[in-house]
Length: 330
Image 1: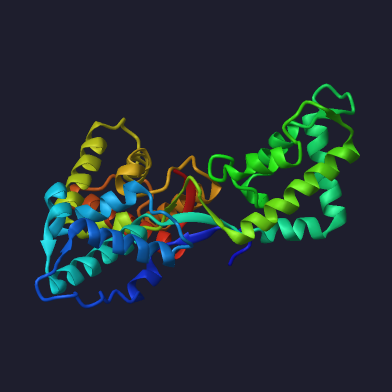
Image 2: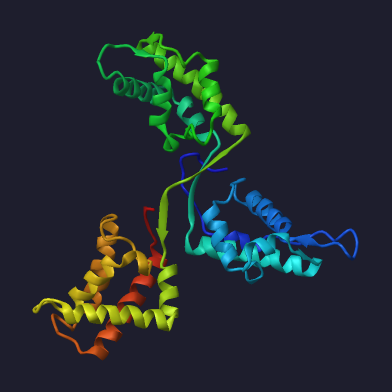
């Protein structure tokens, strides 16, 4: 298992090697319904993904890749013989892997290990407890109520190995167990002692049953952009929009500047990172556009040259994103 605070990227790679052999049917005439096939698939996938329940948008998108499930309701109730069921199972798992390749999930596996390390270092824990107490003592009274322990846990968050209350309702039971849901006031030392007791029990509970937390993070790895580049009709449409924008642009703007502005404003549609996401995105655009601008200066290019230039820029961006994916808030 991983450090509870460490991010893991689930991109579907290892799912392609799963054993998807269905057990032989009890008799030659028995079949499996579409619903049963999906149940088997989800159980198999969950076992390979830290017991994670796959998000509904992910499974729904994967089903759209499955020809047999074009009519969803009919597929769920339809029965398939062993060979066909096996093929559907393989196709569906492949579709999930393809979806994760295009849109990886970023997760933290909270297994108590981060809390163990924190509690093991007395100095680190003392400093953490002091900082939390200071933050929660908004009136600077030197005392806070026991119920503030809940806010302390929320402040610690996933980064310190504490799952959200919505993902791990057992936290409420732990608070009640230690009387940390009352209004009795505690000094800093008492607060630290109570917090330590709650965290020790939480460590034990998480070691028994891990919590997999899905972060609201999107990874831009060039996958969608490569799909655009591989779709001639879609690519031509994008180029035409860029050319139209150039025709309507103010005089004096170079073709490179116009194209960059267009791509940044249509980043989501193209599978590009938002330019305001972080400094790494700005550097990505700067590097690519500086490279393609060499020798062109502020030249005003003809249509044929512009078409080639747009494609060149998109290919360079896809290559860079594949080597160095960008993480941004979804």
